[in-house]
Amino acid sequence: MRYLTAGESHGPQLTAIIEGVPAGIAVSVEGINQELAKRQGGYGRGGRMKIEKDQVQITSGIRHGKTLGSPITMIVENRDWKNWQTVMSVEEVAEKDTQLRKVTKPRPGHADLVGGMKYQHRDLRNILERSSARETTMRVAVGALAKQILQALDIEIASHVVNLGGITADVPEVISVKEIQAAAAVSEVNMIDPSIEEAVKTEIDETKKAGNTIGGVVEVRLENVPAGLGSYVQWDRKLDGKIAQAIVSINAFKGVEFGIGFEAANRPGSEVMDEIVWEQAEGYSRTSNHLGGFEGGMTNGEQIIVRGVMKPIPTLYKPLMSVDIDTKEPYKASVERSDSTAVPAAAIVAENVVATVIATEILEQFQADNLADLLKSVNDTRQQHLEF
Image 1: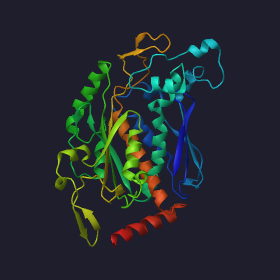
Image 2: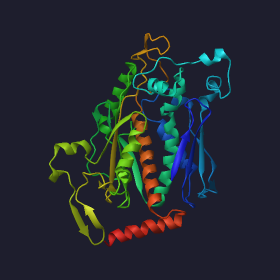
Image 3: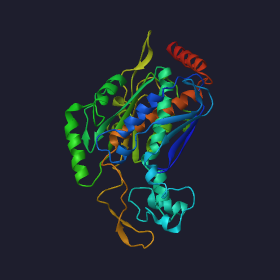
Image 4: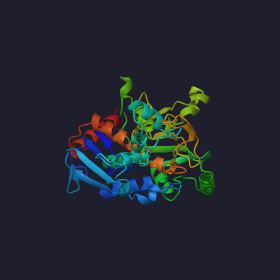
């Protein structure tokens, strides 16, 4: 399975084309829209979320509710486009109109300046329109489809926020995906520790009043993923490496860890490795899960635990200093509509991005032209591992 996304933040629409999805997968458009709605939610979001109510349109690859095996096209319209038709016109416009909403003051921490240098654009709007986190809309739509593939294989996935603005949730070392889903669903900040909810919301409110932004850490967990996904034989086939790349490709994400992650540096090996046990009914398992479900770049059958750290959003309502690329004069950076934090929504993005990587790996490893062959191939492998 592979996909491409296209579209600008204030263009007419966002588009994704996905190829390699097996035939016969039941697809719920409502399920995709639910994921898109969750991406737009969360305490601390800005004005753009009041304008856009994302709804997916599927224009190819699905008939009568099931995939055909042919490429799937998904579209999400930008409702704000009506206010940007001249600014973002595909056709040539009058010279005076080329100056509308022109950006020459790059924002520190954003793609504006480096992108302008790379592509030789004197209007940095040409950079920020595509580098905007609005692009993650389509990655969530693709991930929502990937999650429906995983659901057909009884693979469960959930996400939540473990740290927001320096306030850390108390997360049990052992917790099921269903428990995370239930607890996060009733939290405005997508956290499973209700004791800190009000403190987090207060921190977000105070940050907004100060014209500042805050980041945090999100976690994604999966259960019932077959052992042996990925491979140790080449560096680029290690599945944890693929997931790490996918996580840090999300806008504003700057780090990733699995299991206890960086804490492993503070412990001896005896407190990091997960001891192996065997039982007739369940086969091999581990007595702990410090490694987050991976050994040697491969899934080991335990719960997958992935965390990513998101930096504060670089668009500040009290902007930092920058330089005008035309005059070279010092200025305060440009301000685009933004959020005080998007960490709760970023957890949803991370969840769908990880779902896409796992689904892609499964479809690469197993017979996957149609759902029946895929189910048989995966179940045969699970049975083979049980009998090993």
